[in-house]
Length: 106
Image (cartoon, rainbow, N blue to C red; front, side, top):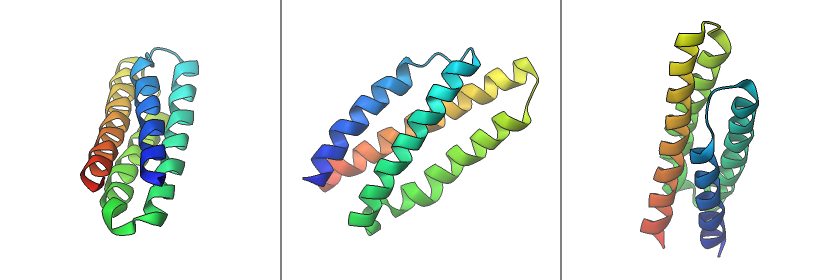
């Protein structure tokens, strides 16, 4: 039951992340909130099925955190836009991968 609930939540989250245009600070903040929501849901899944979701927690969340740190360090507009795109793509990839794991487990 927890898997199907989290799956529907993650699908909505994925749609919201894909809808974010990364061109201003408000959208970046919205993306950060979506990432926070994703990590909370992922940790719920990890607590109930640690072996299944350990790689996503260890690797994908670490990649997302590193990309977020890079954004905070970079102030140059052109470079920042590229970093924001990479950040968004890492979030999308992590959510899609989590959905694949849930599908494989169900």
